[in-house]
Amino acid sequence: MLLNAVIIEDERNGLINLKHMLAEHCEDVEVIGDADGVESGLRLLQGDKIAPDVAFLDINLQDGKVFQLLNQLPKIDFDIIFVTAWDQFAMKACEYSSIGYILKPIDHVKLKEAVSRVRPRKTGRTEERLQVMQQYTNHPNAFDK
Image (cartoon, rainbow, N blue to C red; front, side, top):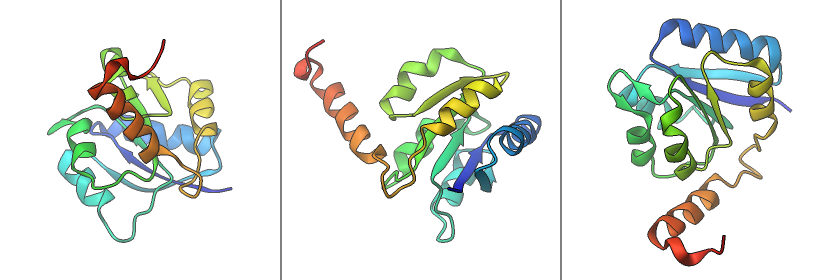
């Protein structure tokens, strides 16, 4: 099954590298669009013709953090895989129910593992996972350890 993907990455070499690694190691992924910042990413994801199954997102972008972009989307109906050089955002990534958090330099095995967890929007549960995480954030004692 072919997966439609978008990449939001502000470093040109990082974008080229990720596209190359996806082509080489994840042949079922087709990159249908890319952006280099919060504003351009928002325009991309709100476009009528873009319907990704998965978004590969760098966290630190030239014009802010990718979380600013995600907060502006009315609905997230695609899976999220963060690809970043910074490990300190892992907990924040959990709040957005990402299915992967890959540190740069990208390990192709970890990339393949993350892609294998993508569920196209028919069965994706990103919105549901976000609601559970937000509920937990608002009421931390709602779940047992």
